[in-house]
Length: 500
Length: 45
Image (cartoon, rainbow over all chains, first blue to last red; front, side, top):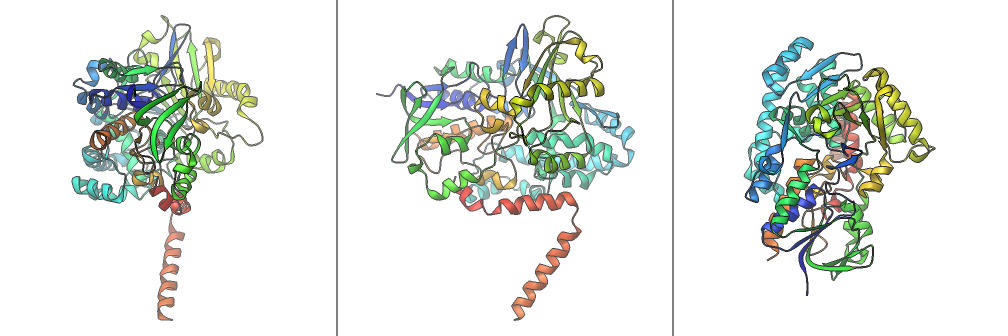
């Protein structure tokens, strides 16, 4: 006799949200998580009274996350104490110029007028285009399965306005921004956002260029740390009987006659369920955790062909002073062309840069309770780091790179930094892999170009194994807190439809 | 013969068009083309 209707592998945002939604469908749900805490990339750990976010440092598109809570009869605001972050970010350009982007679009326009008066009209046109696109995308794209060509046709039929923006999908992020903006400094300030989706401006599909605009609808931080969001989903699920087991690693998904039957844990325990929901990297799931006899040769070729998304080394700094920053997010930028060149000339060749770019996330700016009184935390997201370093390893280079980066940060952005570090923790791509069991430390699971999107990304309802469903960054619509939440809604809908 | 000439002219035009593209657009297209061969197997995942 089965004890559970559904087993969810992984208590990331996707797994917990799917688990909670399925519990609200009246199913008995067990969520298994290998780590000692929930949340995956959207989590927070404690060190001597400091609460440090592992990855995600703000959320965009709160309305998408709210849809998930609404389906459970509550709201995002009720379940998670959200702090509005304003401005969206300040960019410190490589030449020392600083530009701030307040949430208020009119105020942002004034900032742009000061920096690049020739681009005010272009910014207005860009805003108008992205506003229209976002409305259309939120209407249909986010929570609609895109498993087949037929699904995609239905998606466009349901939201014909998306057709108007079709050209965005076939150009690059850089191409779209350059269509509207000419000033290189302004372009530099907006270019790092492409790495929010895991690719440089030259490679990321153009529709993602809506991100800098979308932030003006509001960005938020969860009081107490970003783990508050997955905990919100966990609470909702537990109200309906969902169980979460931490420190429990799933080794195999047991499949018979192409039907998922159970999971096998690392201690040998087998737990049966009618439905298995996977919130782990789908390439790893299909290539390493399922008997290959259950997968067609064509699908195997497909899984093998996926490239993991970029990894991002991070430094977590606990400080005994208020850092000389202004805002929750400060972007350290280099010119757009240099970001592209870095990708092709360094990242893809296994080299890590000495001149850094990335994000300084000053979380205690928004929530001082994260650290002891007078102390602060900065999570530094560095330039994408190759999983394999040319001619050496991360373990060998870790300490040297950490010290070099801290010196660089002190010189360029945080004077006096080294005198105020209470604790500095450097997480390399290899550490991310160990900590989150994310292959190659990939933060968005699989790359997010057009050839890995929608019906070409592993399907939410497995096309190979009955009773197996996917959520998380490695299925449609992709990586990021709101998109992963959307994947959970899609999976819950499909399960509601196909699994009585 | 006529068909071959038409195809050659089209390819030539496409090549000339590609040559006028900025570096980043070439990189974008090159990446898509290098992955295009996987579209069919990926559709079955």
